[in-house]
Image (cartoon, rainbow, N blue to C red; front, side, top):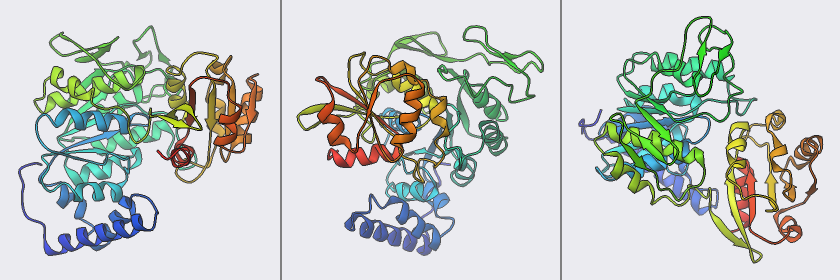
Length: 412
């Protein structure tokens, strides 16, 4: 916990120095930011380094299937009102990347850390967080990640008895079940657009009843907890019933939900909702997401969607037809190599849009769009897609590595 300012041991200092050197070499070789390789080298030299680097910080962990990078950024901006922040802002969210990020935060007060769902329990054990934000759980990377009920159970076991304040989404039954093992939970009504992973009760397996925005299990009585914070349109309602306006440069309902959870986290550290939400307005884009770039004299808006829940939210914020849409899907290691999730996405919502398809798995996506009855054109690359797209700003939606490919191509 924050307040322990015991200096780093010679071994830990050596590990930090070696990690930074490895990262610098990686950057110089054009292999990316170097945060992952740097963290791996550092942890090899001192396996307990992550905990040592976190000991002087008030640590906040953020985990979810969707929205954790953006929410981490919003929380970091809000907490800067109360002191310096160190954060893995670029999304390197496994122990190596987290270690690299914290190695640069010796003068920070807060550590705002995005954590991959699989690693949450372990990172929480190492860093003794003061707060943990749990946003949602849905199907993702089916070849590597556990089924959602198993992931919720992993969270539930790992967070059982945690001393951290858990800020959890009351509208996601899987998150509620996972968080309920903790003694100190702040419930946020953040909404849940994607419900197809939560029709059975995570507690007993019974059928979940969903009248309106409520939910409960008719068999065991497991039900939605009463929230103390809530997203209500363009406002965040705090525990006192006060409504605070949300002004974001980031688009969509999902980001308002992220802001509501972020305001609840900030309040744990004494930052009032008005101050927190005002600071969140500074965030214009997150690791390239939502950026509008110019490419071949055309405006392109870059949007990231990695799984069915993410694609559903993204479809809700694109400009209406006849806005052209470029879709790009890869299936590399960081994406998950199983593309069967494409069949869970309701692509009929793109009816009326001129659609252009690219990426390593463009033919998989083309089959899915053909079955959905949509007109589209398969393209070899972004240049060809932009060439054939009709006038107007182009919405570009891509999964993780496809998104990185596109960012490099447009020089973003």
